[in-house]
Length: 241
Image 1 (cartoon, rainbow, N blue to C red):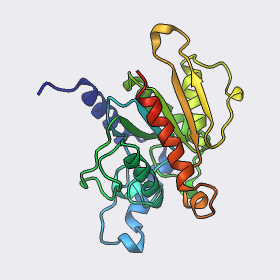
Image 2: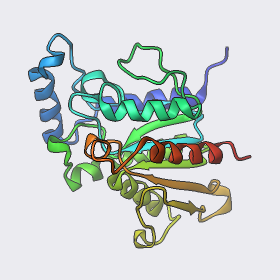
Image 3: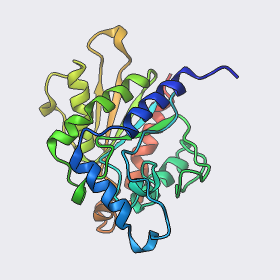
Image 4: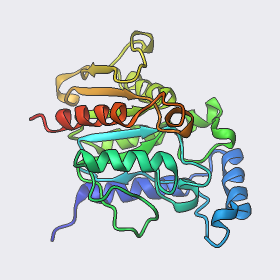
């Protein structure tokens, strides 16, 4: 089988992410969490580094989160893996046909994404789940490279306001939008973005969703039906010719 150029580009990008050391505060925090561990995972070896993208390099759907969880992605080395948010996300992706199984527990569990990729505004777990602005700026190059990799992108699902802002900033840097103030974050909101030059890409629909954090799911602010509704719409958009 001939090599997949997209896969090779994804591997190079992921290697750059894994070895990034631009944010000393984040690197120190992730390493400290990996040493101290949570009692429930004390027998496990934590990953403890920047978490790479995960998914299909030919994806038509990109899912953007905030950052890896300290005892989720920072432990397992895969986006949205090993925590409650991931349970919600992969169940929704499985239900809508974007992956082969409804759970994601560790990097060798056989999970595969089909037509979808997962990234984040920040690739390291931040203390208190609160990144500093400069740390988000430092990760912008990875957001840009991820979008550049996905040449047949049709839809972007933003999990939370920080992810939404990171996506809008990308399209502002690319010249697709002039001002972010024209675009509102609300669960289920859609924003159709058109390239500034017809030959620089195809239109992309940005979909908004509340983040599937326990703060939102335990309180009922986000229900499974609300969450599935966003991914059903993403599935419709991804299948457009």
